[in-house]
Each structure stands twice: as C-alpha cells, then as structure tokens.
Image 1 (cartoon, rainbow, N blue to C red):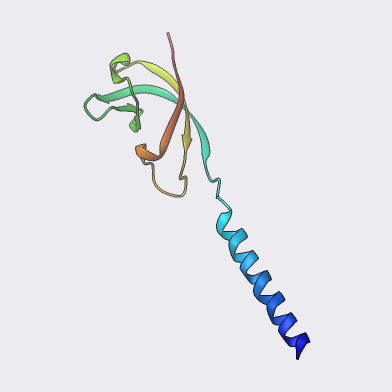
Image 2 (tube, helix red, strand yellow):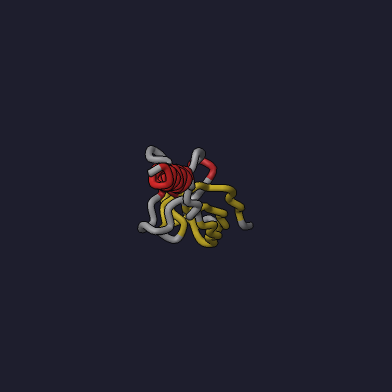
Length: 97
C-alpha cells in the first residue's frame, strides 16, 4: 500500500513540475529583418513611415521625406502573422545619399 502511495505522489510531483516548466518557457519567435527601399508615404499623426509600401512605427516622422532611400533594421516580434507595424520593432534606420 505504501508503494502505491509513493508511486502516486511521485507521478503527481513529476506532472506538476512538467506543467510548471512548460508554462515558464517563453517562445522567442522574433525575426530580424533588413528592409532597403524608398520612403513611399509618411503619416505624421499616426507616426507611420512606409518603406516600399510596408508601414513601420517611428518616433520621429519629421526626419524623413517621401522619396528618400533608407535601410531599416527591424525585428518582427510575431512573424507568424501578417505584417503588423505594432509588432515591428525598429532597431535602426540609415539614410542613403
């Protein structure tokens, strides 16, 4: 009878540990993207900058001009969904001369 209780306790403890371990894991699905192209649209009020039609959120839209050539280093924090500017992190934007 004690062997059954000990085995049951062991199974329960291992199960709890597995659930806790699985719940604590974070998925790191972020994907780094380099985008090179032309600024095609600027929406200053929404702080959106479009590079070849792809919108990204920027803090300083006044620093950009339509037609300007740029290279942007971006991180897509959720690459499993369609392009979403709210899930794109801008690491750096370089201006071309």
